Length: 163
Image (cartoon, rainbow, N blue to C red; front, side, top):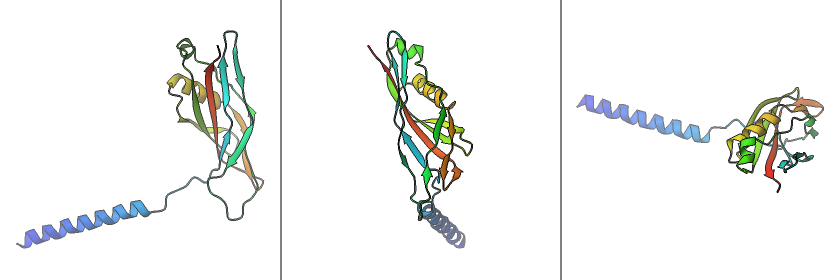
């Protein structure tokens, strides 16, 4: 009898500890990225029978993730150099079009540290072309209160075929 009571006590302890751990995991404070996100208008890559045209556009807005108690001036990163995407030939031949939302984490030096697809165009080749281009871009870093800060840069890249 005592062994079965001990077993029940151990099982109860495990259940209570598991429930407590579950509650902690649900209610614990999560790390929130302190890097502000800057959203830019899309770049459009249009293919016509004659040539490919790329139309970059300017910054439209900046969206900080968390408002600061006493906000210091926040200046978005500026594009210094661009490597514009080419239209992948196989996607062009199949007349595949789409928009890829590229996200790049810009470091304190203005270099893209990590570039990824936030929202896919639906085609891996278009996504790869967009990532490859944006990962080569050069920026001046974002500034807050006059000091360089890391930031997140998002830009939609639209691939379309003009008939």
